[in-house]
Length: 228
Image 1 (cartoon, rainbow, N blue to C red):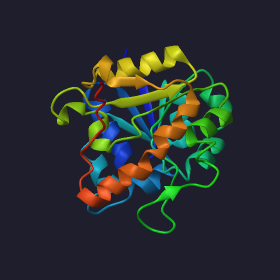
Image 2 (cartoon, one colour; image 1 turned 90 degrees about the horizontal axis):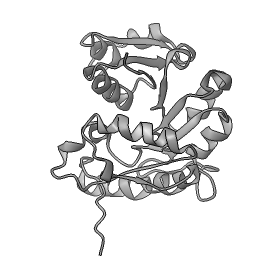
Image 3 (cartoon, rainbow, N blue to C red; image 1 turned 180 degrees about the vertical axis):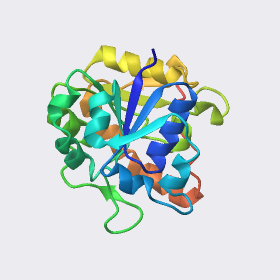
């Protein structure tokens, strides 16, 4: 029986991942605040129109998605993440892997963004999630790239571009890497940066990522590590 993937967030990132996991045969649940309202959205690039093309994806409340998911993926906007997770009852996350792919970006003054106050330098969103969900196994990964690459790494020719990963639980990181390898990543493309405090670095990289995106108008790029 395939792992149940619960994705918190119905935006572009959540939809992109949901579609890819569903194509692979995983049971997929999208968590949203109000399923009826989310499903009623119509128009170009709307959730409602996208969902009509899906066959095996369920839509539930955030709480329902967390309850039923084996692996929880946080694809929420960074500045909404902690409030949503609090609303789900932290005990529901006990023993579960929480893949955090979000970033604490502050667009209040436009583009390019800064990092949200209190979630930078000596802290990170990944750490804040782990603190909020002490019984969960938070794994920070995939947050340094465009969502179109996350589960489609072969879009970039070769296999030398990198996915960073960090978290406190070694076994959970290994399970996440194996899960991602099912979509075309190779084990040598993952760089384990250590415990969850390393999220400070991967989240901080978005300050550069957004500048590159702004200069090139193209998000289909990633980091490659060349060793001397």
